[in-house]
Length: 344
Image 1 (cartoon, helix red, strand yellow):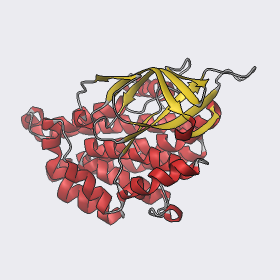
Image 2 (cartoon, one colour):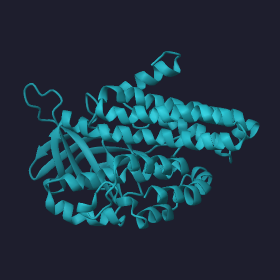
Image 3 (cartoon, helix red, strand yellow):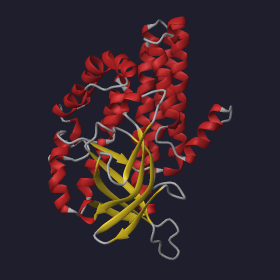
């Protein structure tokens, strides 16, 4: 699978990346190719008819595809949250209905976690007859108009005494505007083709039959740790591409130094899975290195680096994207310290 990812990144994604960026649209053929090659089943495992893959290979695949086209990879990555939720749910009817099609890429998924995580939360779930009423907003939802289904998480309004954070209710909804959902299109400096929007919920009904889980806030955040590590692959993928282009442009020594830093960042990201307290700093280091590497690429190629149809300026904007994408307050604090001249 890692070899397949490399072939797709080099022969399909990277050659089309400038067009995807300029047109703010991902060709459907990108997604169908990934589905045909088995990449929609990475989060399922063989037991559910997907692909069995170890973690280093998974991280390598995400990094490799990100080095080809961040927009495509970031959008496609959201799908695996839906697949993972369906493999873990006790709602067998829901799993039987959607999981097979999701693994085959016949159904495309997205996720909306951000409304449930903050304190106070932005999206609430209130128990009602036969399900839950969702109210509030999901601030950043990627793949709108691309995804068929959306995995949405909201904080339960009923909080037990001493359980200040409450529980998190997660379920599957149709990714379409309608009764109880309004959509605000967002304009971004990079990855505009990811179709990232803000969703507003007003008494949107989530039936019990569409709920995948209700878990504690603490458990929900523990599950997000895995996502936090994998989101670091966006930054390391950009750095990988910048290093290659710097090397091709004749600055081999600069490329060598940046590669050594990249190797060290990967080690720190992996270590963060076992030591969660170190993961925010590792994520910050990955994003800062991507930002710095993209700047080094612009300097290396000279004045062409600021021309619209060149990879250097695209990679600078995409590196900027990684400074905030899937960020958390701890990551922000670490990044501000790094960019502000502090030490790790």
